[in-house]
Length: 267
Image (cartoon, rainbow, N blue to C red; front, side, top):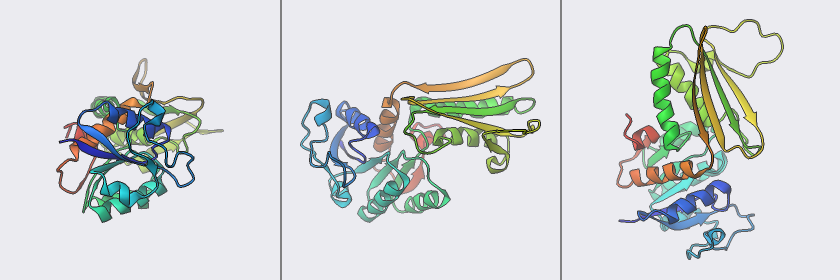
């Protein structure tokens, strides 16, 4: 049975990539496309950018989008995503959330919604990145002593949150493997006279510039050697393909809060 997918932020870079992925997947169809009320693309066919006509116009009505769809894929901004989440709960429909930058209250609201609808919420939908999460867990356990840990990430100039959700998740994976509390051992940037590096510290460095899609490296720096685990994205397609896998995974699922580790069967 074809999964009917709605896409939020349909005229944006990520939204268009998701739509392209839907068009290429026989298991999915584009059922609705959403954008902000001030978007110049409202009323245009959602696949016009690809030289096709889908018959699905970019619109603003979230309830109508859910009425026509099985699941919404959302890579927008936290405030928009939380409004879409309310509509998903009201409609009893599934949602895939790739948006990052949520505060604690936003994450709590997502967890509460997942008690009544199925939700996939992940800091990164790319299959390769989720493989890296597993590798980091293994590496951290092996390199638990004598290695300093740094997380370095780079993204395009338009990204509004830092560090990225993926970088933070990498830090969480490493901290959990080492039985550390990331909120207590993380440092986000250094300047001036900092003194020697504390042994338990996990450092984060952020780069913003140009059109970098997303580079992430976790460095384990020891004496006489350095181990680096890196993922580099050259396009947004891996995120789009992963989000479609998540939407298909939610078909028939019970309410609950899932992530890509669940989608990929890595639990």
